[in-house]
Length: 373
Image 1 (cartoon, rainbow, N blue to C red):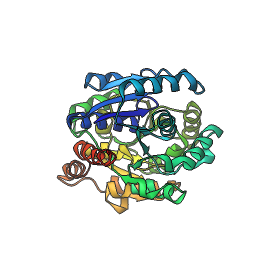
Image 2 (image 1 turned 30 degrees about the horizontal axis):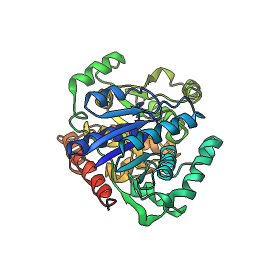
Image 3 (image 1 turned 60 degrees about the vertical axis):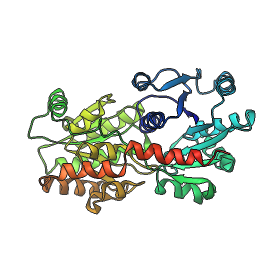
């Protein structure tokens, strides 16, 4: 098959990582794959091109630069004639419909990468995009969600369940693995001592990730655990970053937090942490950070969002969203019950068994093959 995958950009992010893994996995299975991006560049573009993935930038000039972008998309599709076009996330999904209008024989697949968001937290354009997507969902040939938890609210909101398939994300376990030297190197750059217990959140600065609850829980943990250090890894909204720094100052823990910013060496980040915390309030489908961290052997605590409970598999490490006291209690439980011999290896083996890139590619291929005449 000749497959085109459409995504906004190749900046660092969970969906971007998944599209790269899928492209590589499908290529290994003998398919011709191209990734089409709205915008030029992106920090993952060079990495994917080095791995032999074809990347085509459609040169979108900005949020409203639709005309030229759409013409370039249609021109590429007419020239290359892919078997199908697979969109990743709402705006890309809607663009697949424009392509189908111009090329009626083109099969289109929509990707749902999160559970339904709290739209009150986002701007008017985002709310309108989701509303249009809901109205037009029946026009997609198939819809792929990365989790049952993520798909359910969309189906309840009117998306056609008969067109839907659930395919869990995959993780490159050759890349995400225990790396003791990387752990030491990054912790040294953070000025973290060997006895420190580093608790990290790895997430873009976005309302759904709820860094406020993480900081509030951190203050409760810091009050009783002097060896606890907290790392905030990820970029995004500068207003959220400023608000969270002010919150840390107000709570008296500013000197206990490492504001690490975004990182291109995520295996080193996960290895540097003693515990990864996912504090999301809403919107998660299949949290990539959990399978990546667990593949590195790193323990995880999460709010009960998306498929987190199934991925982690330990009820005492799952708490309700928006509850900093309960989140702090779960963190303290992990600190008070150190890993027994072999637990890190068990975490990794569980991820290898359940979430391989080969399984991701094979399951997606089966959906694609079902669309062929």
